[in-house]
Image (cartoon, rainbow, N blue to C red):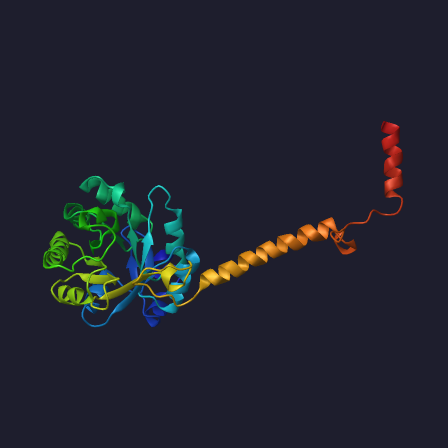
Length: 300
């Protein structure tokens, strides 16, 4: 019965309440604590903008949780679930939607199975690029689903490549109608990528879905940016919509030069006879080597 009294990380109910956390049970049957439930998120619509990121490592996830990030997305590969599980464990109190691979489900039944696999690892929802039929099946099975509209990179051949979408009337209506279709299918949210800011603002007013904006300006309910962009993990060029708040890639470059320098000094020290020095070797006791050689000669 102990697991009923505490959440993930062993947080007692009173402490969880003081920290603004809600006790939950995941769809997979595990007790835990979260900063938001789906209901909490939907209750925030139109009241304030939430902040979202996608970490690529447990260290990034832990840092994001400590910094107060509201929600996270996590890439989930059913064939290699360990990285997603590690990220989940690193930020146990933050609402997470596992981003499931488009090609991993070829039927509504497979979509449900994939969603259940994600939820069994501790996901609070799934994010997908599925058709409304697949979303409806997963939502009917009790899985909170976030769809994807606007520029959907893996479907970008239909919209003319990796470019902004929604700059013509036909495209703007298509984005809106896609989102309304996701709404009818039972989704709770939709990621909206690289559409005009003003368009997202108007669409967001006209849907019950939480709208997560990436490259779509400030008109949505959630502002989303990958952790690698927030932290500057990589050198330029950067996506137009991104902003770098740190330059970790420079630290990585400096660390690599330190590695090279350390190995170079080691090579030079060995070749010059400086390593190992007297403080780093074991000296044989007096007479040991002489006795050893005597015995070896007898054997020979």
